[in-house]
Every structure is written in C-alpha cells, then in structure tokens.
Length: 179
View: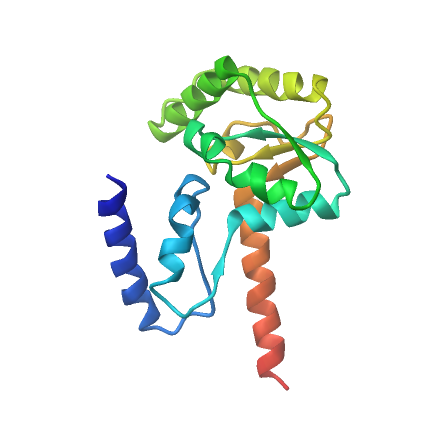
C-alpha cells in the first residue's frame, strides 16, 4: 500500500523537521519512487541516493554500467533515466537474473543468506560485464551485505555512496559555521 507508506513517511518528515535537520534522505533505493512526493512535505533539502550514485559513476568516466536492484527499482527506470541524463548506458539484468537478485534481497531481509547467494550475484554481475558493463551499481541497500568487496570492475555501493555524500554535507556545513 504505497499511499499508506507515503502517509507514514510524510508524518515522520514532519516530526523530524521540528529538529531543523541539515538535510533528509531515504536509505532505500526503491522508496525513491516517493521522493518527489515527499519533497513537497518539507523545505529541508533531500539527498537522492539515485543522484549520488549517478554522480559517482559519471565521475568515474564510465559509459556503460550494470544495475543490480529490486524488480521495482529496475522497472521504475529511476536509475536508467538519471544515468541517461549523464550519457551513461545501463545494462539491465535479464528477467531470470532479476529474479535471482530479488531472491538474494529477500534472503538478506529474512536474515537467511544462503551460501550460494554470493555466487549467484557474482554470476549476474559477470553476465552484465560480458554485455559491456564497465562497472556495477548495487542499487539495493541489502546487496552490499552479500556482494564481494573485490570485483574485476568498479562496484558502486549505493548505501556507502549516500553515507559519504551525507558526511561531506555535514563537514561542509561545519566549515561554513566556523567562518
């Protein structure tokens, strides 16, 4: 029930706004489907995980990148549109591979990671690489818990990228307050 979730998130934003936060964000790629609607309920700026990941891919000078994400994130086209705006082509997983990735995500959420989950994710990423992907986006915050830290091409961990962007914003605000 998207409308129910949206209502709850808007109320949470209203509560948080009372503390005058520097910025807001959503630590879930799929929930970014509601970002534009949530932005209307506050004057506090939002950091978009999709925009931050895209900036990182663009800064790495990649022209073609694979996307591992939930089926909803992939079907929404959020990443594809943002990347296309930077002239970066997205290599999407096959329908079969989307189901594999979804299964891994569900296992992580359930706290029941199987020994084969990592191998399956690596296989999906390698298939994307064979289609020309120069990097892989982990477009779901559960995937870094399973995906290896070392991989033959650059890996863009969406939650780590978002965390770094928020830290940078925080430190920039502190420097600004010292002048």
